[in-house]
Length: 280
Figure: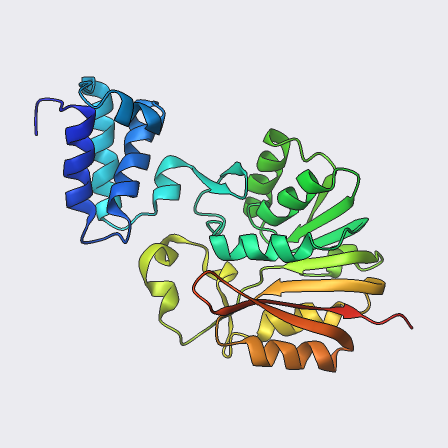
């Protein structure tokens, strides 16, 4: 197409083009069109006959071409919705996913005065908890300085000013602190698994995806280190792979946790597990 089309025609044709590479081609087309035009998605339905301006049409074509090459929509638009807010995202951080919203939901079931988010990435979990508990003390740790730059920017934009961000390896930057709650979405994919080489994951940081040979290495670090960092009666919740539930529950029990639970994602897979550290 050389002449700019209407909004409706642009959406329709892009959706058809993206069908072979996306599980949600119509939604992808709409998000990319909103990014290219600066228009709200509701306008596409309210004024489907509106003709795109030439610069917006060129931007849209370019975005569709990049999506066809596999780039995630979140990287193309620069943001992704999470819970009830929008986050800046990019290649330095994992794209927030609905599974991680279940981690936040589990954590919010019991209020906590002090929180530690390990492997915070974009800051999505720490920010969600900060918005729910504005009086809580929250520390967030990540080994990647680039990821922390993204997380800090998100926290500033969303008013989550109480979060303290730390660069370092797991518990090392906060080793003298104790918390009411620890949350983590650690790497949990095994080194030989094919998943990181498929779909959007191809464009995401591998150190945030791959834990080691078994996929349980980072999970074990989080669980085994938690008792020394939790107040008596404190809780740990973490996200894990859909086949890792039994192993995670065993690790939690071996570390002294009780009231161990596992929550399922929207597909019915075991995805979030946690427990409480008994008071000594």
